[in-house]
Image 1 (cartoon, rainbow, N blue to C red):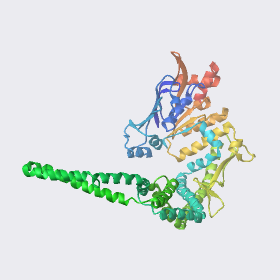
Image 2 (image 1 turned 30 degrees about the vertical axis):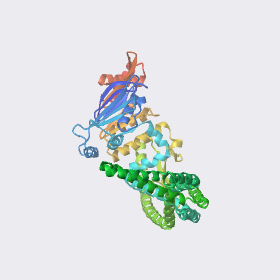
Image 3 (image 1 turned 120 degrees about the horizontal axis):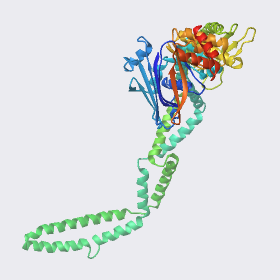
Length: 566
């Protein structure tokens, strides 16, 4: 049960707190006073999307909070405990909407996510407003209504889960079959790609090695001249460095006989002499190896041409060529195994389709049985809501769709979707003798309101909603019908907390608690305010609802009589 609602800086509401009780609570007031804003605030607390547009002008944030008293044996209490929330003070929900769009949710004082909020409030309260009328006009929602009223959502969830496991397999199978159809051409291309690379027999960093070798061969004459000249200077010419060092060593050996302190220096000069000799020999070997390399240059250039062509084709370097080779080899293996893959996926799809078929046909049978029972209940409720002779049915027909995400059952020429194999259209004959027609084509505003109320009454008997909120339940009705709806709401309030926004005195008179919502201008700002009416002010409010702004003695007397005879 909703026991308290607090709203701050929300639309035209400055700061408002409402305490609710059991039974039937009526909210009334002039159009535009802010009644629907209260419904919007409740929707927000039940998990609807937050928007900074809801923040009151000149405020930095809006805050909405509610306290719900929860039965100790309810599923919500179990879910709260499982999520680690303190249940001693009931369920306390707070939502803060900020201009910076950093909106926050608190449950029992702890930060929470939108998903957690939705899970906890899923069966907490039911709000019936304009959206309920719109849903009723949309055939795509009729299936949801039947499944919800018939407790078929768990079975439907099985279909949804299995369907979304199967659809990706079907798409994958389609791609594999397409690839299989093009297998030979693709294999031919991949084999060419593989053989082209393998035949090249590319070594790691081969291009770098060959480029250096080519540079050497192209400059062999220059290298010969430099090395031959250096050899001559070091060893093979009159006055060469080798000759000079030999002369120095002979003189230094004589000097060492006089002073042996010169021996280390002489040994160092000998080391230089040996190094000169070794270097000269190395130079001799090098320039003697520098033959005419024209043939070798042609070979290297041809090889580099092959490597550069492959590099341009496969990514710009040796590593990318090797990666393409690996990729081609792996894809060849994959294509070679296509038939096995197709067979394995087909087996999975066939298994899933068999299960889907069983689930869908079972769900369809249950829907057909349930829809007849629900139609009978709705007809009974409509009769009690001043629609005698009204006929209602949920017409179930097979689903047909050519979209790729759907597929046809083998056993029947019908299409299965994530919701099964059916589509449902609500049909009605509002008056005796009239042909049954789709609700969207024939139902008036008042008839829609009564159908919505009938559905809510049936839903209240099948689900654990403790609080039901009605907005626009009086759309398109008045007089005797309004009186009937008032009685229905009063009767429903014996087992549920009912909160109803209404403009009709025939409904308002049945209230246990009656709040008047009105706008007040203070300091140049419009504010929504709310008052809990006592017996006297309730009579005045019902008189206003009867007569408008000019309350007369007659309307006051009429209001007293209405309350007295409720």
